[in-house]
Length: 518
Image (tube, rainbow, N blue to C red; front, side):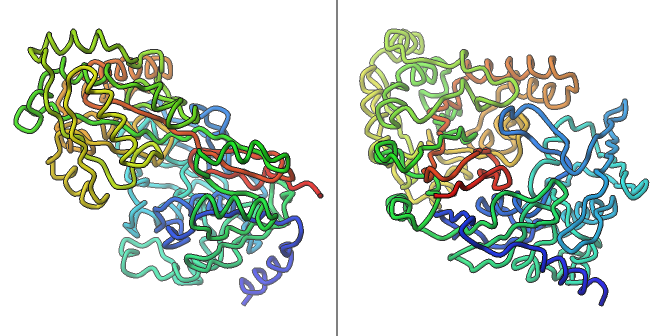
């Protein structure tokens, strides 16, 4: 009864929606659940960042840095296996309950034991000891330099153990079959964040209001509404009419319309999503691509500037290999540039002076935000200039993924999106012949695997950065994965929106955002 009363009182302190509420037009149809231990989609990340918090944060200004969140500080043992977190004092959940180390332990063990899609984030955790109310010691299975970065992901958020338990939650080993808190968490938040969830209507809308008791001080906004809109054009029309305040992730060909409107602002954010061309080095499947010089020839024949400046209007960037710009060790100076003379020389070196036939498969949705037919025709024309005859095979995305996973494609256009901001999010999957895209395309380059091993376990920052730079260089030389673009996300906002900050993981920081009076 006391818990119910406290929660009812806390809800009474939450602000109601008003003129200072931001309305965001975006696609919310991907949301399946708003339970942090179960959700593994995209839009829920924005909601979680507003209503929940993690022990550690990654600032948008420097994606290689870490800063305190619900933990004021942390210590790492000399053997790298134990992380001791010292929690912030005076933090309360929206229920009014104080946040303690037991809440962290419960949240992480619940995540682990529910065994849902995001449970792998807790795989490194061997055990958690609650030292006292504001201290916990986390023991890992193995040295994992990426652990602090993993702690920053929304799935590792801290939930109110008392409220979650009262609504069917458990952290027991059989939580995958006994936990029933999802229904409650789909419509209510049990977090410490600056906002609280008031409702979620699937495929339609998510509503949040300000938590006036937030430990960091109340947000400027009264609330946030994320409203379903199916396409960029409709979202922009609603923004121009004043029906919404932000149009999310608009198409690049609408950018000029935004910049021409004095009442709107074009906001640019650098995503970490890489769209790449993968070419199998397997002799049976790849044919001529088994020759490294042939793959390098393809890499030098592509007109990257034509894609970035012509098709993407300059709203993109391109890393050297499978470490996006902004991540530790990524050096865009190492990337390939178009050099047709070099491409022809490489073909001659490979014994393919007259070129060769190549099939490039891609999904119907295209690549780099470019329609499949357009990007396909561009690559076809580029490669033809050096005698490479490319056939563009456009498939349903589901069929493409099935064929890619089954190691059936000679070359494929695909996109990789990260789950957390550490270089291992890429090197763990693009390095070894038995896992991830490396398995799918049959990459087996011992130097790449060795560098991934060394960098992934190196604890010295400078040494780790150098190892990842070498790792990227090895990928450039292997030319199995060739990045085409690292797209920028374009949002359109009204001029009333101030302190707009884009983050590549959770996209919006509503706590920092303000809405000026008209």
